[in-house]
Length: 524
Image (tube, rainbow, N blue to C red; front, side):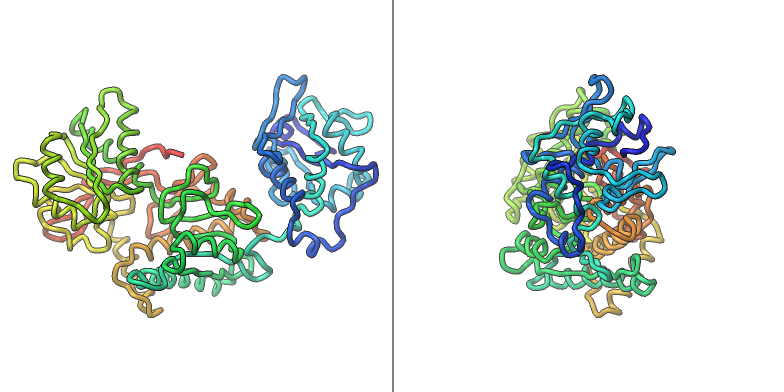
């Protein structure tokens, strides 16, 4: 950062090299592996400055550029944006941002002849935009941090690139999952564990990910305290990331307050989560796809939602309402939410007749859908939609009348190759002695495992959680086999943002497409 700057690189980078204290040259710990194994409070605050551009009280870091009319703030002012997650330095468009590791900062540069920096030269560069008498350039940000913030950053920079990453050792990366290992759903948990273990064994046989094997760390989601307590136990066991596990209303954090990445969680993304990656669209997005399909045959369909009064049911209702709110010609949907497990088909049918909707979106179980269809009269032939997830692995078991009446929104591929891949997964589960009946959640575990491996490969030989998240955000049309291709970005953590509308063929008793692929913009 000190030796060479182009205008574009400077605007991208933020507050770096902000060291406070005496005029003497700061020294990196001689035994960084031991000294940096666990960051202290000051270094953790400095880590937030470096990576997030966030101060001790959550305030954004601010830097002025040029004559002060342009400024950087918050995440755009974070050092890591330009100098890398481990301070390794980066180069883009011919503009190099030098390394900020302790060895680079405070040791002489043999190539350029630059002596190692001391605090005076570093502070002058940051606060005044100069090194000695030489100006660094009009685009160099100028930052003013108080003494405590400077000390925090100094504490972190002394360990930059050498702090121990949770869940990562020389030969192992530990990944956590909270799955049912006891109770009535333990067969599902066993199938999920077998699917993930099979993927990880395959990768280990190929030499691992940068010679590291993946260790699956399990907690019983039916254990003491339920699934969220199981996830908390995994956080204390220092896992690098989570996969395909129940997710709470708040993102899972480790003992240092860092959010743990979570791939393909079993539940909606918490509002303030930054490291949760959904593989398939949530129920709210599926509801908007339903609306888009219904609008192709009727310009202003009035929907009636029937769903349980729980998080899933409210997502369907609210997603449909959000989609209709974007169009002035559509009225808000009506809704009949019932107590989960207490569905009254006759009451639902009566309420539907009273509403006289143009279409119905049903969010209950397959059994409840069958009961509802039986309670309707033959005159109530309005289009009906439901998420394909209610079919589970057995569309043939759906009530024939419900199959004739209902269209399903399905975010996965529909072709012969998928059937072959499902058969292959069943065979692999059986080879591991795992149940191979209802394997919907095992598919989720396999997709999460293969996506995790790709993210780790892209994160490099010194993986950090931040580098892993950034690597996942580079995935474009990633083929994972049992899912539609996945694409993520910094602004989108939903891998699949579309779906087909399908029906259950009354003769073949399997799903067939009735629409082209329909997409909606993800909502974050």
